[in-house]
Structures are given as structure tokens and as C-alpha cells.
Image (cartoon, chains in turn blue, purple):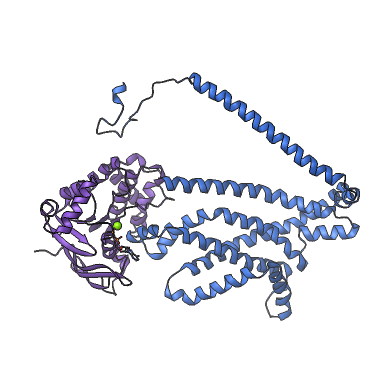
Length: 303
Length: 249
Ligand SMILES: Nc1ncnc2c1ncn2[C@@H]1O[C@H](COP(=O)(O)OP(=O)(O)O)[C@@H](O)[C@H]1O
Ligand SMILES: [Mg+2]
């Protein structure tokens, strides 16, 4: 049996060239190592637990024993009141979710177009490329709050015929305008990291410029920028709250109404909790995708 | 005599002020293999890229089946469809499985149906003993397997001429042979080829003509026995001596 080891015959395609001798039991050395590893693992987790308790405990004690704590917990953590207004805040959060869905879809399309225009080398696109560059530079350089105010109050002031005065729609537009600039840059960076040899291979197969982009460059680029795009999605969810300054009743606005009625800030804490409920899982997921994509790139580097 | 598949006449290429190819004239008749040897940096890759119109030449003419492909009115995509190119670094598309890599051009460029493209791809994979890798992704394949898939991918569009650029240079010595035997197989089946290689033993086996390139010029050319065994020019002798010392003969 052991003679079969190696690449003796021409047809090494059918079975595995190596055969393992059935069952295996760990040797004494390995068993010893395992015991040592386990002991060290136990010690490590003990140290971690002790230090966590010490640090977090100290922090909690400092906060709770501070002179203002009683006052603060009454205004920020009055749970009974918090749960009373919770339905209103959740309803408001519906507006944030709706804004996010609409904005994310439009941003994906508009951002992609901007990125494609900016990376294109075709001479016919030149004027658009300049415009896209200016667009991205301008809207990445202005605080989003300002853009929301300018669009939300500026456009109705123009009194254009047929243009909406609906703050909800104007708010969405402002968010889309800003985030498209961010997302365009992320996608563009992804396109630029695809190695030129991939393009050369595609072109030498006879694929056109557009086909190369569509089937070879973009799929790789988008896969690479998925983690930063997910990060932008988390930011987008939070930033939809900014449209509340236009008077859109989102979670933040709902909390603001509730708290101004009772001079208690618990509704804000509730709103924060609701945002966290959505953003934390998404952040964790982003983290996992990032690690996976790094692993994949490492694997490709080794091949 | 019939028209050669490929003919270069006094081709010149410069990058800025650096002249990379100068006065290159060759003909590649049908069913023959022309092999370019020469030190790294002598311009072999650039020459192949010029033929594939990935680079624009500065002077001279390149003819494919007699037609001038350097004419500005020629559509480069149209020409590349007739040429297959395999690179030193494989350049498989990492986001596609082996079979998807192979059927991409037949489907998108040659408008074949998916079924037809797949069945042809599987036939090719079978012919080169890679059938069970069809569904794998490139990063799960050995370098030699990846390069053979790259060759198959370029064959799938039934090229008039195959351009092979140092296709074994990035490979483990153990894996070189499987790739070379694939190329030998193609040669026996009448494929017209232009190769750049450092594998002198292999060059001797497949080449109908060997050209020694130095600093962008063809210094010496002829039958493989002449060039590889009795080179006339001192530069060729020097080059072959160095290759020999590196253990590649
Ligand atoms: N895109 C490029 N821009 C500038 N110089 C280049 C470029 N590609 C190749 N060269 C130069 O051309 C010369 C020949 O390179 P190459 O064709 O890759 O040689 P070989 O394939 O024989 O090793 C080298 O000196 C290289 O630096
Ligand atoms: Mg080269």
C-alpha cells in the first residue's frame, strides 16, 4: 500500500495520490501540549475577567457616587416615562428606516454612475468627468447639515413651479446628494485597486471596454469595497436623523417633542437605544465581512 | 508561398525617450511556432503586447493574415478576438469559477449560448485533464493548473494565433512541465504560436524559429538548433551561457 505514495503513474487524476493509514491517536507529547494549552487558556480568561471587572467597576462607581448622579438619573433614565413615549419614537424611527431605504438605493445608483464617469478614460466623457470631479469635491467638503438646510429651506424659497415643498422629499434629496459623493469615492477607489493585468486579460480576450468593466472590473471592485460601503450605510442610518431639523417627524424629532413636553431627557435615551438596536448588528456584520475579505485577499496573494 | 498568419515589418516602439523595440521584422507562417528568447527587459512582453494592440507601435506595420492591423481605422477589439494571449501571471478572473472564466469571451464576445459555451469549455477541460476543476475558483488551483486554465481560456475563442508570454516563469519548477506539455500538445495540433520563454529545452522542442532579442533588436534568428547550439553572436553565446548556469537548459 505504501508503494502507491508519490506520483508514480500518469493518470493521477482518478484517486488521491496519498493514502493515510486509517485511525490516528494523538501521541503522548501532543496530549501533554494540549493540557498545557488548556491551562494557559484558563489563566488568560481569568486575567481578562479580573481586569474587566476592575476597570468597569471603578468607572461605574465613579459615575454612580458622583454628586450629580441622582439628578441625572432622574432626567435621563426615567424608564416609566420612557416606555410611555416609546411607541411614538418607534413610529418616528419608521421615517428613518424609510429614508434610509430610499436614500441607500438612490445613492447606490447615483454614486456608481459618478464613480464610472470619474474613472472613464473616454474622451467623449471628458466634460462629464470634470463635472463629476467638481461635484464630488464640493459635496464632500460641505457639512451635510448645511446641505440639508440649503436644500430644505432654499428650494422652497425659490418658489419654482412644479418643484415640491415637501420637507420629507427635500430632506431625502439632500441626503442623497451628499452620500452619493462619499459613495462615488469609495467605489472609485475600488475600481482603481483592480490590477491593470485583469483589464489586459479581459481586453485580450476581445471584450470591449464596457464589457471589461461590467464583467471583470466592477464585480471585483465592489466586492473589495463592500466593508467601507457598509460603514457608510451605518452612517447613513444615523444621518437620516439630521433631516429632523426640517421638521420631519423622525425618531429624533419625536423624542424632542416628547422631552420638551415634560422637561425629561429619557426619550432621547430611548431614541439612542433604538438606533443602536439597528446599527450594532450592522457594524458587527461589517466587521465580519471586512475580516472575510482580508482573508480572501491574503489567500489570493499566496496563490 | 501562402500569406503568413503574422508578419511584422520594421516595428518600433518607444516609451517616452526609451526605445524598447527597434526594427523588428518577422513572419510567422501557419502552424508554426516562433520563440523569442532574451534577457529580462529586452522587450519580449512589449512585442507581444504590441501585436495584441495593447500597446500602440510608433513605426512599422503589423499584418494579421495579410491585413494591416495597425491601421487606425481597424477596431482593436475585432483583432483581439482573433488572437489568444496568455500572461506570465495567469490573470485568471478571481471572482469567477474556472468554467465561468472560460465561457466569458465565447458568450459575451462571440454570442454563443451558455449551454454551447459550457459544453465546449468542458470538452477543452477534459482534453487537458482539468475536468474536475470546472467549478473551482482560481485561488484553489495550483499555479500550473491556473496557467493551463488560462491557456484553455484563450483557446476557447478559437484564435488564429496564440501569444504566450513567459507562461512558466511564475511557476514552481515541478509545475512547469504540465504547462509545457500542454503547449506541445497544441503545437502538434497545428496551432500557430508566438512565445517568449526562458525554457531553452522547451524552445528547442516546439520552435520552428528562434529569435534572440537584445535591447529591443533581433540580434540573431534561425532554426532552434542553430541559435541554441551554435550561436554566432557573442551576446547570444553570453546569454545562453548565463541561462545554462541558471540550470534552465
Ligand atoms: N508601460 C511601460 N512604460 C515604460 N516603460 C516600459 C513599459 N513597459 C515596459 N517598459 C520597459 O520596456 C523594456 C522592455 O520590457 P519588457 O517588454 O517587459 O521586457 P521583457 O518582457 O523582455 O522582460 C523595459 O526596459 C521596461 O522597463
Ligand atoms: Mg516580460
